[in-house]
Image (tube, rainbow, N blue to C red):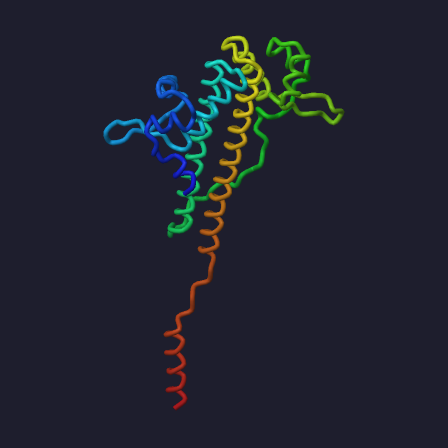
Length: 247
């Protein structure tokens, strides 16, 4: 699998540092901060994967090009690792379900079909004045964050902005990043982009898993309802018996 090769630890620290134009000591610092997670050889030597190299280049972009402070970088990389882990869980679950689909012989338990209901947290209910009051911000700040695509409020039929509970959670997270951690707006944009990406990936994963589960259920049901095959030998024996009676 292509994803596996990207996570395979192959580069020693000197080579990894050269690839990303950093000092090896910087890579050790980033590891202590848990910004990267290199593997270890049997002799405990640090080994970096292609994915680690991508993460290091992303850290350099955030710090050098966007001016994001270390607290902001930590948030970005934590979300990036969460996204990587989610992708790994997704691939493992898909593989498990595909194996089950191929090998399962007995009838499965009935599985509920996806109901397609909207998550209550995503239901747009708050007008901008209420949303601003809930998160202790000025409504103009919420409009700015929307233009920056940090939040994505819904719209009523009359085009009025309506904010969901998830939007409120996002706004509180933005306030934490800016006020408590001192992350600049460029860093907040990166963090919220990853948060939206993780939420979309999780919803996509859950939908695919539900579809596979339903596929397993449907296939097993169709197998149970197939007519039993006729016994060719029994038919032939019956015909011979008829012939003997005729004689």
